[in-house]
Image: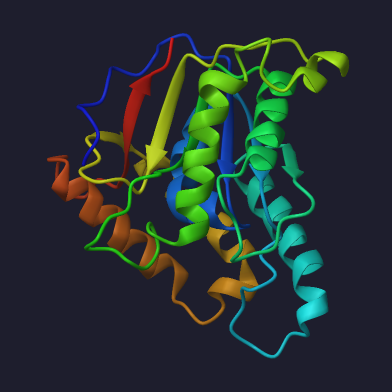
Length: 244
């Protein structure tokens, strides 16, 4: 199973919502792309499902990790120009499923923010990458977000309690998936590499053991080369689907 070929990206996007499982997912995936959207004048918001309480590589007490990682994510968002970062409550790192409860929370966020574009992790497992893109939490959030885009956020009869809260139905016009099989929509992020590195470094509890700049440049160079961009360019890649 794979995605179809990407649709051309919409040219008239005003708001975009990124929905990911853990603090740092959005930055590992697409900090450069987010920075480019902000530069274009797109209003970007983040919805993070957990506070990453199972993350880290040192002896930081477990009870401190959620607060630490929330602070890191807000700092990383600021590095690429994103001001709105929302976290969901009630979801533990490592336990996510595409439940009705999670679908309802994402649908509520979509109706509240009213984005033209949603960016999330792929719900399709990549057997050649069992680490990273195929983390069960990533797959679960990708599936729940896909269901929230269609049909939940646009259907006035889905989650009727949202109408009672004044959240009117909203049609997301486009969804971007990160980490899926054969991503074919490359974004040249060369001008934004310094912001990408800064965002990644903000997640110190996750990246302090890395040479962050080398890691970022190597990864983005590989993506650019695979996309056929000229030598020296850096890129992030996605699958883009229309949802209207």
